[in-house]
Image 1 (cartoon, rainbow, N blue to C red):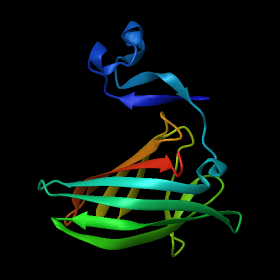
Image 2: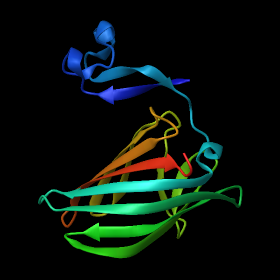
Image 3: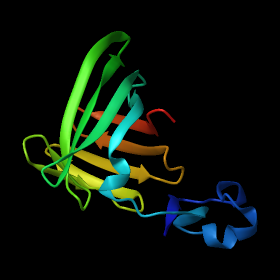
Image 4: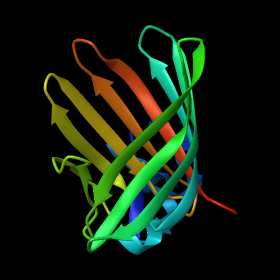
Length: 169
């Protein structure tokens, strides 16, 4: 078991358990519910995907679709398909693939390293010149889980928040 961490508790209202506020002070707040360490096997199978995209200029978009992790070559192939709406236009068909290793390293389809998912959830980062990608994996409500990316660069400035729900759940 690991403990899921929330950043920036300001007062008792930011702490899930007000009686444990002393655990919530400072740079991190400890959630009352421990989070199990995730393994690649936990992700295998089909998931529903809902993503919101909020540009810094205020425009919004969304993605709705499915994702599947399928065992392949000692790891897993991740395939996401669905529809995306951006800037008041769409829907457009969208698809992406990447590969996951057993230690939760994630690679782009062309084999370049992207990031490594923390098994307990937490922060990740990826520098893709000239853009910085800062992510946060949240497994506190497993098997519903979320990943949020903040992207900053000269041509990109947005937050993408994706919720995964086990298909059929």
